[in-house]
Length: 430
Ligand code: S3P
Image: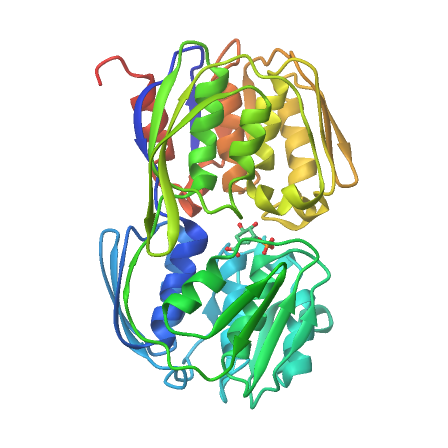
């Protein structure tokens, strides 16, 4: 599938972004491991989260779904059963890595695989600490790539210092820690998103956080509950940047999760001079939420590095788009994790934006972008990466002629109605 975007039309109106991807995965997994029924409202029905539901179903969990409301009959920590077939995580790193943590605690055999992109992504960061806790894991490339076969067992608790700030890695160890007797502790070099800690505590686990260390007491009884999933700030980010860079735009993005471990994008856009106003700040299921109004503004370049990077790692491709149209230079450092996302996002951004006439310098761990660039029309390819597809199409809104994005279906991984939402914001009859 390909989509052609006509730019240079002001964006106006309201957007209700879909549910948060990270929170939707966790809600489904924790509900499965809890006792009793859970109801998840505002669940992201993107392909990644549907992969998680399908894997849990294969592991013996009863799940029903009506649009974005999901009901899960929890089986308790020890109630999963061996799947009859391979568990396919599709494109979803979160599904693969979090389920590895769960399966490390199961006394049965499982095989996890994924699509061509996921089969290239590093798994050793997760399998090594799980093997050290007592899981048996074998797989391709010395057990570092999917497909991976796993037979869990009786696990030892872990005190682990992660080499990278990764919420998927942290969560995998904490999930395995649910099955170990005693205290499991994960210490990160910088804090990654903390949805697992928050939600495990809400389901009844004993979790404590001190700076970048999370401690969990093993073998809790988790209780099913109601979870209201906020809108995904990583999806909102595309419209926050779009309305900033397209002149005369004024957009209200409703129901956006503003957990501080995710709000790096808001701080960066504010530092760049964006006109953002937060309204109606509230809390839903232990997560802070707000409505965000954005009006177009001339942006200025910034420098990003260090502890800020994990707080906006998924937003870097769209921050590059903001930087292209800003005054002055933007430098992004310490973002080498981008090389192991759904694609090598540093290479993808540089090469695909070059097709529209943009000049972006790649570094080992980020980018140097001169602002004030003009982008022309052309044909670009998402490389099957949802966030690359959406970033290219937002840049297209400032292009001098139409841009065609090939392999555009992949937006369905995290934002199934993305193309319709652009059209609605561009239309006069709202
Ligand atoms: C996620 C963590 C991040 C992020 C991904 C979702 C999560 O990945 O990029 O989109 O839900 O835990 P890493 O854990 O690899 O940093």
